[in-house]
Picture 1 (cartoon, rainbow, N blue to C red):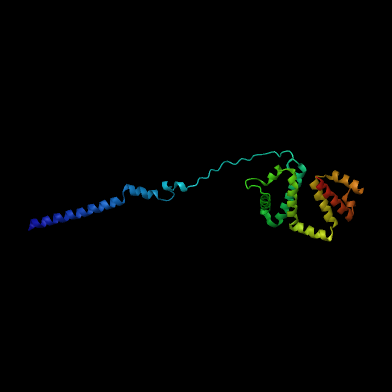
Picture 2 (spheres, one colour):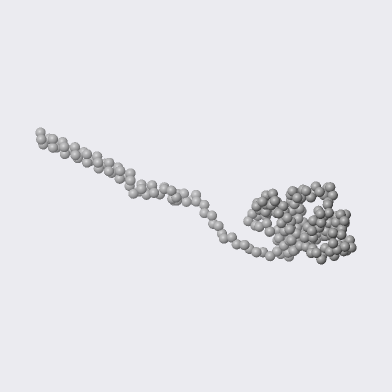
Length: 221
């Protein structure tokens, strides 16, 4: 009897050890090095080999500013046209800045580039390389924009009622600047036209005639 009990105990112990060994094998299998490696591979910020084709690499080249002198016969080679167009840009920018503040110039240049099909990667001053024949197109565009500002609309409305002397004097200053005339230049023309050397000596009708004279001079260029 006693020997039978010992045999039963020994067999029971063997059975328990067998089950523990089987469980250990299962656990080891679940945490095998291969599985651990796979788990690590799918962690955050890990690039999977099978997904490499989905990665886009942007090769950005270094930007270089290339300076190109305006060719002969271009707008940029004509100092008068350059100053006139840039003056109109400056005037338009200042008028818009009163309303749109810091974004005025940025929007103005973007609209100009869009209107004249200038690529986004080029500056608006690309027009300086264009032939002189396109200057009128640019000037007309800018004048239309100027006329559509608050100040421009006020001036247009005033023109229907008749210009005042202060307005006409201001217009002569603006046209003198467009022509690039200094004081000595316009005084010679005043002497030739009206026999005086000062705009203060002109009446309203004479000032209006002088403004038209200056506009004709600009159109002749």
